[in-house]
Image (cartoon, rainbow, N blue to C red; front, side, top):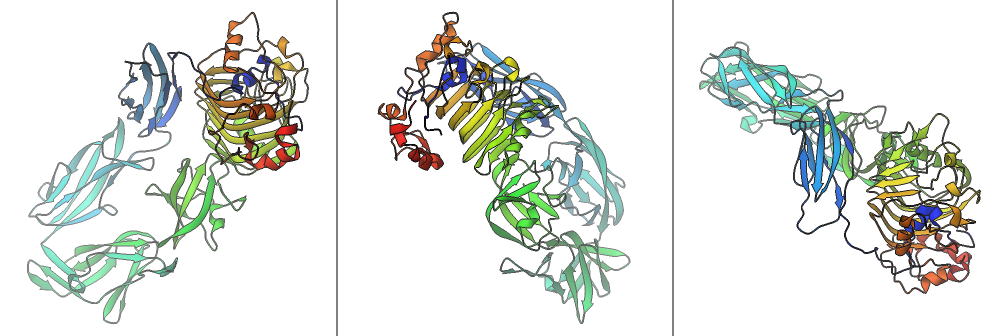
Length: 636
């Protein structure tokens, strides 16, 4: 924010002029509805079983309805709301049609190193014991990519049909005692499933009473005290009664099916079951001539809520807490992360960090486990938490691919002498993600280079959002290969949003017209710009630069430009004058902006201060604004 807070907008500064919707009434430009249709994604890669809601942007036309279809319903199905379901491996094109407009999104569905596996509800390991004439629902499901599905096409086979039978997924024990096997195989969404075999024992009608029948299963915890609570860490068995066909049996013994989970030992007249590690197993009562009767044992780790604001950066594999990056386990004293639970599924940790099983999102409840205890933590999980200027290279520099995800700024970064540029061997990416500055301020230098067109968010924006950030005292340089580029990007093409952005920058070379653009060069379809203040210095001879916006399907509201440079118009291109209609007047000072009498109600007080001077000022820059004279002296 320089003493002369001015803005040169020209249509040589196309991006700037385009956004200078203001110093008018602050409302979205009007006009008849233009038939248009855009999708937030033009291509998707989904893992089998994934779902995705495809967003569509269109102008409503009376009597028309949005219609969805898929060219391959056995690969991707789509409902009337644009919800996609990856139901088979392959490729499909999802089509949206509105009026005479039709747009496509290509979708690839694959396994991507994941293998679907058969599981059975209520069966621990590969053994099952039933009493004669009883029934058991196998509950066959398919586990895949951390999710569970019940739409497999399965076939079941019984080894000895005289011992048990199976129908509609229910296993029925017959009159004959003995052992047999049940094998299940089949397909799921076109994928062959490995056969799973369970050994089934059928025993006589037997009743086993532990502690007089009060104990039917055992639940234990790995720690007695955690988070101020007390937990059960042993189970005493003081009496055992066994009846087979109404005959009492007095000889018995105990065994644990998975001895790494729990142990049992004699203690005087009682038996004591103790936990060893979290998991599920069975207490086996052995009696008669090799007969067994099972009781379920579940060993849990006690979990307590951990208070605090925790953020996780997937790209760094670390937690951002207390203003610095730490391993997840380092935010808890005397804790070593072994695994974590997300969405009801437990995953193993990798070097003290989450694996790739976590996805971006806010207020995600994740339970962190070591060997003995757990902590439930509310995490905000982002693709990248930016706390160094060099982190932006992960967005704009790469191999020319499209970068998606959720990126947030951790703090103000005021480094006026740090230069961001394109690293050797890299080319500009496109950006389709979300960047949230969270009210912070950035100050730096940006070099567009001499061979490529790119900005801080790469070349093009596709379905991107850039919001809640102030660029203050930013200096740009470079030729962008003799082409035009702005600070944010070179082009804005499809369905993107810029909201709550303050932009104050200057140009290192005022004679380099190509790069003297504040936001971007070409404005494409469905660009939404809201609550933006732009402030750049004068560019000489702005009328001579021929940069034009090439589409008018954009929505601009509550955006203001302060500049003494008039807008560029070209008699050779009628489109250039079209955009001047949405910019009825440029304000040459904040005093003039204040004199418009606009209330600026749309500017959220979370990021802007409107009350102090009657005009929108970035909240954390109010003191600097005041030091430069407020609305009286900040003029072009």
